[in-house]
Image 1 (cartoon, rainbow, N blue to C red):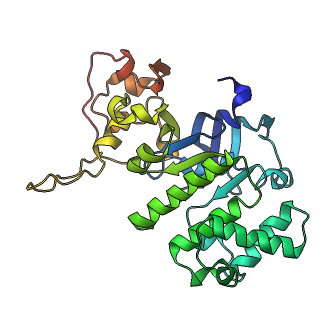
Image 2 (cartoon, helix red, strand yellow):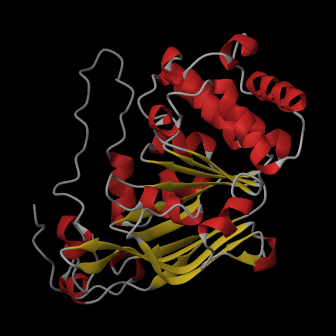
Image 3 (cartoon, rainbow, N blue to C red):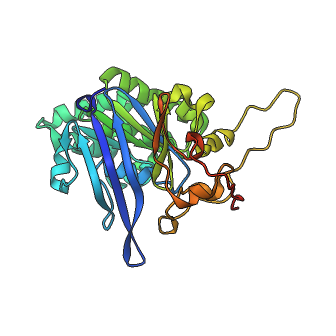
Length: 337
């Protein structure tokens, strides 16, 4: 697929955050692309840079956090150096965002109706009556019962699942081509999680929009995404079609995440203990010249500490790993706990 076919592309993006009086790279050399109608999942542990990546793609980086290198293209337009005013004209119309915590994202002193109508009026010159009718239609699309009553409610009067549906209604109010959903099912029970994801897929199917799904849940990725980018310590370490993830993952970190998934309890057998990944994700200021995962990796060698792995194409995947490309030295490291 050519670059012209991508609705969203990030090339060589580095994002820095201020730490101890200096700017430190929290996301490094990010390369991503998103095709029309595709669902791309970005997965990894907390602290890997997933949400920071989502905010950069949507032009929502916090004060002090900078996109210091690379380029982001939205629908073929370079938006790397856009001001907030530039973004305001494109966000919501071209790109919608569903935030991780709807309770903090929604305004607690405005009714649900006021917030949806405000989103409509921001990009559409329509009458108040038309905006009200559209708000009701949006709540119906996201399967909220009694939408007229919901319009009069405040966020605290709704359940977590209902608030997340409202966030989705606001995000799709202006028919964006791309939707970024940052951990959209966090803190929801399993049934509500499935309902929210079915809703996102139905909206995607009806409108043809592309979806970026930020998550740490590989079960969710395997069921709902088309392609997955595994992220570790601010860098993508593996990217491949989801269909091949569980059986063909190449990077040791991808394999460790898969092994750590909860499994169904065997019949008439004790529940298996979950596999663990020893250690923790290094903070941005702790990274050395080599592979960031080396200290937790069973396959690491001295080479892994000396030099960051280059990207290699293995089948339909892109993998950044010395061990999986035959480039390891002979000296094996003791794993650092």
